[in-house]
Each structure stands twice: as C-alpha cells, then as structure tokens.
Length: 281
Ligand code: SF4
Image (cartoon, rainbow, N blue to C red; front, side, top):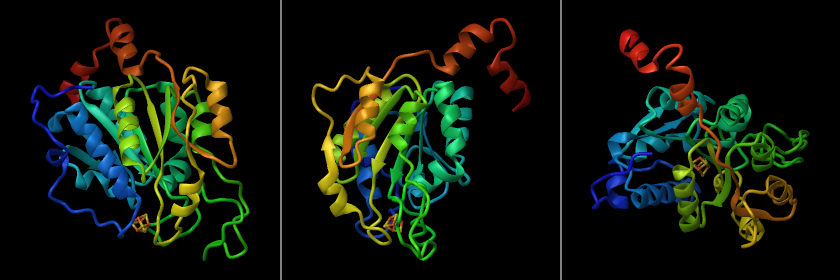
C-alpha cells in the first residue's frame, strides 16, 4: 500500500463527480461512505489506487470514487484485481461487488484468492438478493425465501460468507454493517493495511427488493472485546452463530503474499515479470 505524502486529502477528495445512482436508502451508500473515509484516513494517493468491480448494483462503485477504476465483468472482480496486483505490486487494489457476483458466478475465485494470498482487499456488499435484476434469490438468501423466481420458497441452503472465508484460511476476515459506517471504515482501513488477501463481508440491505434493515439492526452484535483474532476456530464459532450477526475482525494471520514470493524467490531464477510486461505489453 502506498501512502500519500500530501497531508491534506479529505473524504471529499476521493469522491468523483458522478453521483451514486442507487435507490434512496440503499445500504451501499453507507459502504461507499465508509470506503471513502478509510481512503482519507490512510491518505491513499488517488493515482496509485484502483477499485475493481464485477456486475451488480454495488459494482457501480468505481464510478463514484476518484481513484482509478475497472468495472469488469460478472463475477470477475477478483481475477482482475489479482492480475493487476501481480503486475503492479506498488498499487493499492480494492475489489468490490455483491453477493450474487462474489458467491454465485464468481465463487470459485474466492478459493484461489485465499490460496494465493495476493495483497488485495475485497469488500463484498451482501443484501441477500439480486437487486439489479429485481430481487431474485442469491446464494446468501435464507432457505425458504419467497421471490418471483422462488414462489415456493428457496429450496437451497444459505451460503455463509464469513464461515467460508475462514474455512478457506483467508488471511484477514472481517464483517461490518452499512448502517455503522464509522466501524466499517475502521475495518476497511485495517484490511487495506493488512499484507495479504483481506475479505470484508458487509451487511448492506436492499430496501427496494428485500429490506433486511430491521432484522440486521436486531441481529448485529460486535464481536466480544476479548476475541483473539489469531484463533480461527473461535472465529468460526462466531461466524456459525445462527442468531447473531457478529461484526468486527474475526481473523488475521500474517503470511507471505504471492506477489512477494514471486519476486523474491521465483524471478531471480526464472524470469522477471517487469521485463516480460515491458516486452509484451
Ligand atoms: Fe440498492 Fe436494491 Fe436499489 Fe440495487 S435495487 S440500488 S441493491 S436498493
């Protein structure tokens, strides 16, 4: 992560001229606010930061931020972000998207991002529905959820993003709530500073097609102050709680990142990625 030498950057400096087109009350506003706050707190240089997205309501994110952006294709925010970081490890790379994008068509990429531990941050806005296409079930919709596409109720089980990330041994796992942007901003800040793949799951309701604000207001609970984020087993216990939606830092582990290992171990013996890119770009 590159930090700016300019001490005057504020939240406003990270806002683009494009106004968000989300429905009034959409949780994604809170996530955008939290992300801008975290960028301002870290003084990230706008020309050294890239926000990559897939497809969906939340994937419009890069348009609203004055860093570089890449609005890619459905489910592919993670491979684009990882490729970018491997080629340009000097950049701060943030991948964003929703539950449909990350946990349906794109879920396979989560497995490989966990294994590679490339230093990117993923912020996943989960509203338990496909908002952009008008409210069909997504992998995180609860079992039995009735929609136009599931008139008899969803027959599949509900996907648990935090438990999945923990079981894959993602090196930084956190959860926030869009209605608590200050706490969320602090989590995104920690995730950006973490060296390795960081996964921030965000409860971000869709009031237009599946309003979960009341349910999540009641269920959201900060992780206990004495939670030890080096304990993956304890983190998993909190992630599997069926009543509460714990927020905070579940798990963190420092281990080598793939872009560092590639440059320090492989390149001196085999080839230099920088030269390869120069030659063929
Ligand atoms: Fe947000 Fe739902 Fe509207 Fe999409 S449809 S912008 S997720 S409120």
